[in-house]
Structures are given as C-alpha cells and as structure tokens.
Image 1 (tube, one colour):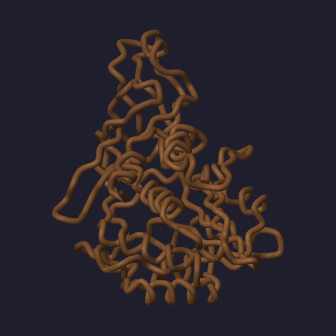
Image 2 (cartoon, one colour):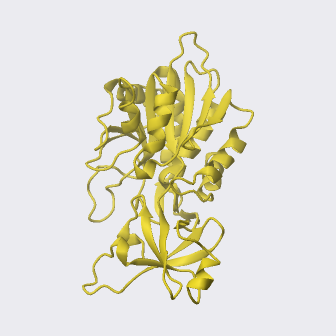
Length: 331
C-alpha cells in the first residue's frame, strides 16, 4: 500500500552519499518482484522489470534516495559541533530543529544570536548534542559525521502528510509501487533509486550513462504556490501531479511531456503544468547523457521543500501512481 511504503521509507536515515539504509529497505520491498537488481559504484540501486514487447523501449525512471543534511566540520572546546550543509538546507527553517546522526546521537540545530535578527548563514549554525566538552563530544560523534532532521511523519488534515525527507522519498515510494504492480507492461522499466541528487545530480549522471535508456523520467517533488504570499510556481496541493515544462536544469522533451499527458488522460487523472524558475532534478542529468536522451519529470507538489516539515497530498500521490502505470505502456 502506497501510504505504508511511504512511511517506511521516510523513517530511514540517508543524507547524500549515505543512502545505504534506504537502499536496503527498497531491496527488501522489491525482492522477488523484479527481474534484476544491482548497485553501482556511486550507490545507485538499479532495478529492472522487463517489458513484454519484442521492441520494448528501456525507460529509466529515477527517484533519488538522498535528502539534505549537515556534516560536522569542527568540534569546539565546549562540545558544540560546527557544521556545513550537505545540499540546500533552508536556513529560515533550520533553527532549533531536532537532528540525528546515523549512530543514534541526537541534538538540536541552533544558531548564534544575530545582530539584526536576520536569516542565519551556515557559519552561524551549530549542533548541541549535550556534551560537556570536546572530549565528551568526540566519544559521541566525529568530524565528517552527518546529521539529518530527525524522522517524524504526521497527518495534516484528511489527505496530507508532512515529514522531513519527503523530497524525495515520496518519489521512491511511487517507483517501488510501480515496480510491484506493473504487470506485462510493454516497455522495460529501469528503476534507478539514485544517490547524491541533492549535491549535483551525481548519481543519475553515472546511472544514465550506464543504463543508456531510450527514455528518461525523473519523479521528484516540486515547489508550491498556494500559501499566503507564494504565487510562483502556479502549483497547488491536491490538484494532481504536475508535468514539468522546464526548470533551470532542463526543458522537458516534448515527446515525454505528451506521453505523460496521454497517460494521465488514460488514467483519468488531472495533471498540472509546471514551470519552475529555479532548481533542477535527475531529468537534467539524464537528458545530457551520451548523445542526449529524451527526458522529462512527473512532479509531486510539495510545500515547505527542504525543511523539516515537507508536506504533500496523498491524492496527488495516488494520481501519480496511476499515471506512471499508464506511462510505461504509452511511451
């Protein structure tokens, strides 16, 4: 069930470069349901489910496993941890958040007092792990250890769920469910659960080169425009998944966009049209691979991206799964 798959994946610790816990859960979920499964040198989990057509296309669908985090850069004599960002930490939403390291050590992400009460910079941040001094702190964590916002999923209203790591575990959940429920589809599904998207699309870059697909599709969250003071992009939660037209990394290939529209029509699912004036995702890396690969994105509207409370609407998720089940046949 999609909701249960999502909650399980949201519970996994997995910042960029340390996606192994997420990959292990996905392997367990998909074991016995796919035709091949392998992990490449960067930690991408690559899963194939063969198509039934003699001339089946190889469709690479990419959902990234990593999420944003912090890495310890220094331990001060008082036991506080100085940090650098791993991916795009939202500074306004970062203060006084509970964080956790892979070994279970927890702390509070704080900032130094600011003279003008402005937004803190990364240099102002530190983690308080309750250590009395540097010696005690070093028994708990080391320079180079990473922390993430502590997992915690909660219901918001009737249809919405919020949690850290929704970007992009919601897409990982969709790709898992697609691989579980697609039956006798025309084309071969090459599911790539990618690594290190948040630090430069690194996993998808090498995965696309190795897979050499005929078509590429990223599944990812997109920003929102339906809260007070926020109008761009013109995307609303609960109004359906979004077909990306462009962002800073890609102008989506028309054939992929058209196939998504056709799939949505066949599934009876309303979709939104997404023009994002910032950001990018795995589709940009796929499109630039080798001599070029037609690529696009199916997006899940998400409020408060890169915060500890990323919010989605499960109606958009259910619709996206139905679109994907059609897409692997119509493209």
